[in-house]
Length: 126
Image (cartoon, rainbow, N blue to C red; front, side, top):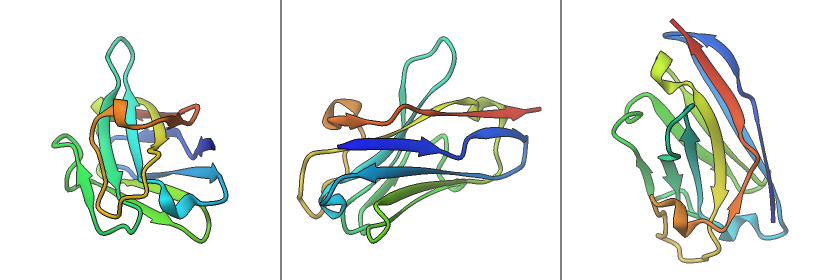
């Protein structure tokens, strides 16, 4: 399983950005997906998760109401739409896939995810 994140960049505070994660696997529709982020000097933190069907979605309190996670199983891609960005959203954003085909599985902890992308840098200027 290979994951490739893209779409990061520099954006002003209050702006929007969408990052994508292409997953190279034959059975993408059986992997719960998530986004995590890591700011300079800080530990990696949970951002959002989505179950294989898309019916179970969860966000961190820091991004709830501003970010939206979505997946397109036909395109083997998961997205993170980020609106109303703040300087504190600056981080490397990582996508992750869990090796579980349970329909309602959408864990919030990094240890639940076996596969990780390389990360894409999002910088929000004030």
